[in-house]
Length: 389
Image (tube, rainbow, N blue to C red; front, side, top):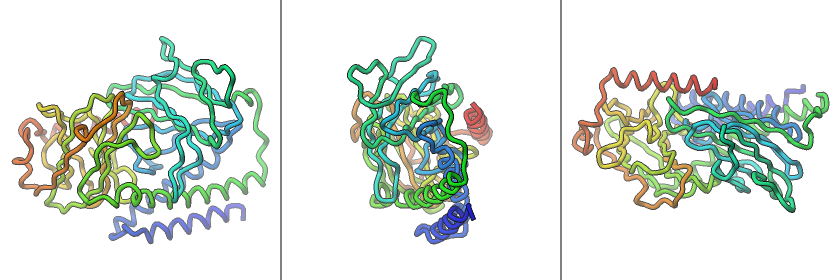
């Protein structure tokens, strides 16, 4: 059967999910099967969009195709490319906090992070007064024009990140991709051989995706002491203008984690929680992430986030949504300076009943149930608008 390789890969992926070392409860397993469904969707999309001569951008992760501790504040676009072709990216710059471009050598695998060949944000490209831009990627030239970026040996993927800080007001831009060498032509007609290859490739992508992002936490998180976070550091495999602070938590229902961090001068700063499957928690219907623009900033210029299962009645509550174990990450983007330890977080675990005494500005941090419902409704509306924008 033509679909047999994919069916076999799905069965193998289900076994990997069921035997994942962090699975302790039925809920862990149910969430794993949901993660598997999203991974199947994403793998099919990736395989069918894999055409380096006639590429187009696809959304590589979203609410139903999560992976790699996806950032709730980011729209991720990617396309497969080849180093010997020239590609044209056109679009309009929206009002989001950051727009960045990255060329990767290879893909994420269970044993390595791909090299970043080129990475920059829109400060390095020519943008017209009306917000429009055109940049090109291709082989080395003797006299490249402004906005031309060389594809080094092994270049295989173009990744674009559009990052929001204020979900309610920032507007999404537009972006398109074409291969200059094939513009006006058409790809070959589909064949049975091509279909067989795509189903086989889908299965391989699926298994690699599942294995890779189960291995990721071991590299970057689980070797750290629990209930701690690192100082700011350049994100592994990420952008030169992005730093992150990582950690993993394990809390009883009567415990809370207080994460205190200065409000940065970076255009984007955000914190999020992730499940043991190394994906974001439900950020549509729960406040499991906050940007600096969304968060309550205390009079001393610091933000104090409260990771808790029970409602502490404060604006910067990050909801665990039943996850007593998970990941926490802070990102800073579009930086113009290096970050130091002083820019990073301080972490404290206290009993739920002690919270009011441990928050220096507890009274100012309070929100009513009605205000909380309004915050949740605003999240739902903003995500709905962004996904359809």
